[in-house]
Image 1 (cartoon, rainbow, N blue to C red):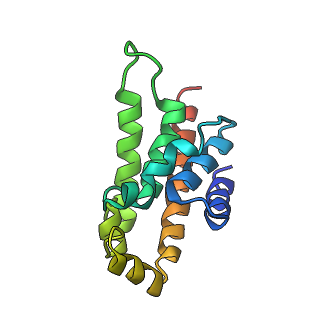
Image 2 (cartoon, rainbow, N blue to C red):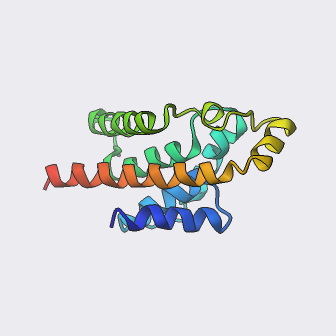
Length: 151
């Protein structure tokens, strides 16, 4: 299952969805979760949170995917599982790629025409695809580890 989800996120990305949308959709599918809110809830997280240079959209999508399983439904529930799994994802991604920040990962500012041109001219979409596949795989692995400890 975990090898299929990263491949699925790449299919979705190549079909026209963006990073956070693709990652969230692939994780949701891997968990048997369907909702009309997915992937639309992830759209504003794409391109480093709407081209603000913030967190990588693939990482944001993976965090949302993890929280489909580990998030809470009421204030009475603990945040600790969600936070622990999210921290693990961020740690793994940073260890592999050096950052979770879109601007740092891309080396350009996607909010500017010059940055978008640099992105296109340097074929940085390939890097985004790598990040999407990696974030999806990491999230699905973290979910599987969590589920195996709790069954």
